[in-house]
Length: 362
Image (cartoon, rainbow, N blue to C red):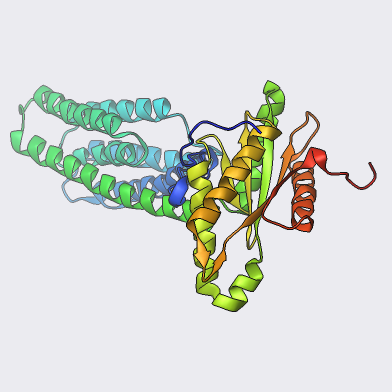
């Protein structure tokens, strides 16, 4: 069998080493949609405050009350629309809407009879930008809001109110920083939950659910590109006996040690997963059965040389199945398992290629 070049730990999205997995595109979409709908609650709250509190301030003119009622109703309408939107709008649309909102609020401030309450409406675009957009875009919205307020105040007959502008700008900056902090904590929590849901807690490898999703994409991509792909199933030899003789702690350590060996020997493009108690699988795009077999041999040799329990060496059996253009992941697994059973039947601690196994009915 031919050998592979020196390989690095696995770094495939969905199966990063030590469980440090990036969010999948599906998870990012769900997370963004959740944030968008959560923002709709904030918008609704702002609209209610605008309608119930600000519009009822004593001394507010009927002209300003009418303007605030229209603005509050508009915010509520946007909140309803955001709540029932099936997908998060593109970031460019959100940025444009926030910038337009700041300009509209600036126009209201410039021509309102009383300016005390209207800067409150700058909070909505500032908060939503900090919550939904990249930091550079959120800063742009904040700067636009501050500049728009300064221009609006300068256009008023009473002239520029430095105190009001400074207070509003400081509040906007403080709110932005606070929202960034909450967003960072939320993103970290969501990322951790996604990681726990997609990786094996003991070994840090991809779990069965992640394997099913990612392997299907890898097989489909290889078939579309007409490139080779091989699947290798590993099973630690005499693992149940190890558990019963030396205890579950020794068994867990054996699983972690084998997972580390797989990570060290695999390539960045390989998917490595734990799919059963002592069963592991490697999906290897771009290589054929000989190279995959060499990889499995190298894994077994590394395991024998670095881990033992008492006087017994830890060994592993493996079955290798190459992909054909009509294969599915399930078909590849069946072939690899047939080869694995042949390896077990031949004495364990060896690698068998599926193409060398006589399958039932053939």
